[in-house]
Amino acid sequence: MSLIRIPPMLRGEVGGARQVPADGDTVRELLDDLMARFPGLRPQLVEDDDIAPFVNVYVEGEDVRTLDGLDTSVDHGSTVILLPAMAGGL
Image: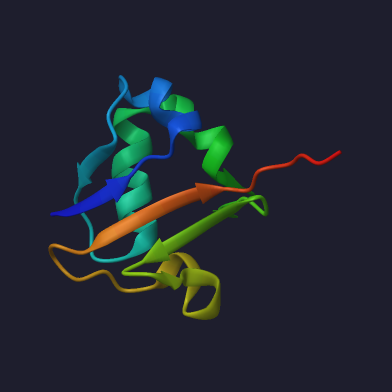
């Protein structure tokens, strides 16, 4: 089991939780487990069976896009952080 940290803008989809446990050996499996329990997250996290372009996913501080993307291995007990991009400016 790993922990997925949920950013404030997505917490409404998971009942307000800051982090949610998930099962899986890869980022894909963890996200599939998470999205099966919280289907409202799917359109916010994935696009065309890949990580949505405006979402960053980190495993133990490493951006999975610099690793193996959704196929990045996740060790039992790891922390995965979801970080949607923020837009703004003056």
